[in-house]
Amino acid sequence: MSHVVISDEAKVGSAATDRLVSDGFVLLDRLCDTDLVESMLDVSRCRARVLREALGERHIGIGSAAGYVEIVQRSPGRWDVPISLQLFGLENEQAPWWPLVAAVLGEDAENSFSGVVSSDPGSPAQCWHTDSPHLYPKHHEAHALNVLVALHDVPMEMGPTECARGSHFLTNHLRNPALVLEELIYQHPGTSPELLVSGTGLPVPESFASALAAGSCLVFDDRILHRGLANQSSSIRHVAYISYRRRGYSANTHFESQRSVFDTDK
View 1: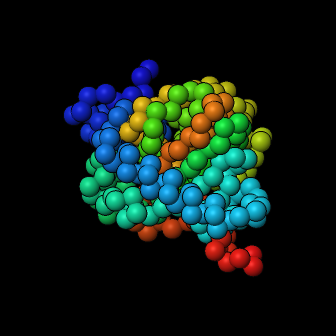
View 2: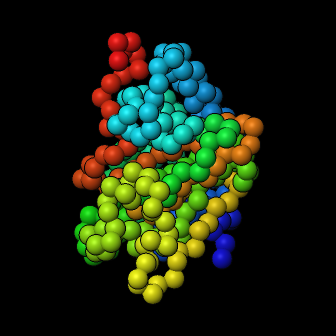
């Protein structure tokens, strides 16, 4: 089954919405124009240079609590740098993916986070994880979405994001006592698509990953099991992210540190 919405009319229309709701993700091929993508890449590289200079020789551990307000190492060699929509030169309603976000989360959906994740050459694959938990034992519609934007071509050897199709229906720790919330969110090595269906007789969710052309967007439900694959290329992989939440939802596991990289005594 194809996961790429190709036609211009369908890119952010009902076909994309239906796929996002049913599969937990949808890949929108070349959604963003070249000027926007190149501008976002320039901003990302500039911000990274500033932070590397400020960081100097200081060590950053793994995970949001071990990092800084301005930079987090999500997994070895995978750097998350928050960048505001304003710095990216974006506004919600003008973003090419906004109609899809609004269709799923509502016209009053709020931007919760944005930035860029850069994975160094040789960085390993992440552990499977979700980005936020289910809120109720019964399955509800999405309360948060992530939009990943390829800032350049991302071939398979550069490590695109892999999703477990339909797993957003299965990651509910409030319904399945075998699942541990912290192990779902904080990249535990024991978390896998197989774990979600252990002892249930249900089929293991299909894994999906695809090479991305510059400007392509992978949009996914925060609750889906996913991971960044290993970067086996010789180049840094830059992927921007823009996260949205349904109005009233405010959980935050993305940036938990309170220290700043510009405080030289920390």
